[in-house]
Amino acid sequence: MIKVTVTYPSGEDTNFDHDYYATSHVPLAVKAWKPLRTEIDKGVSGPNVASVQFYFDSMDAFQGALGMPETAEVMADVANYTNIEPVMQVSEVVD
Amino acid sequence: MIKVTVTYPSGEDTNFDHDYYATSHVPLAVKAWKPLRTEIDKGVSGPNVASVQFYFDSMDAFQGALGMPETAEVMADVANYTNIEPVMQVSEVVD
Image (cartoon, rainbow over all chains, first blue to last red; front, side):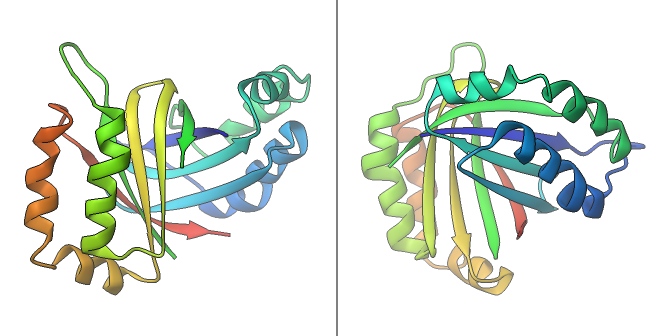
């Protein structure tokens, strides 16, 4: 299983709208990419304000998702909830 | 639900033994801390070599776990699989 984690590091003069993120942005990404499962994190302590994990069956499924035309709309929506540059990590779930 | 993520950022001259991590270190941490659930990630692309998520019912459960005397043994074991300084993030799972 492939897990794609998008993380928003905290920093000076950064803002992040957690409500918009959970109720509008992530649903938009789910509609575009159709991951198996999604998990949203709100930072309590540590370097990150928020993150999301998208689970996919395979790298092919993830790359296919990212290649969808709707991806442009997802990316353009980031400015609506934060000024933080997101960091993307792709990992294999080991279990 | 509280999710504690421990991340190992990649860098020059770093090493990480994924087998030892999954078969010895994380089981040692699970024995000490008794999380609800654990997930191990092996990095494919992005800033991190590996990470683990420990899920707890509450901040109290997590803090109680970290306060266990076995935590010292878990920390001392890190040198057995990596020279990377782990980064800890505590988050609330939003669903």
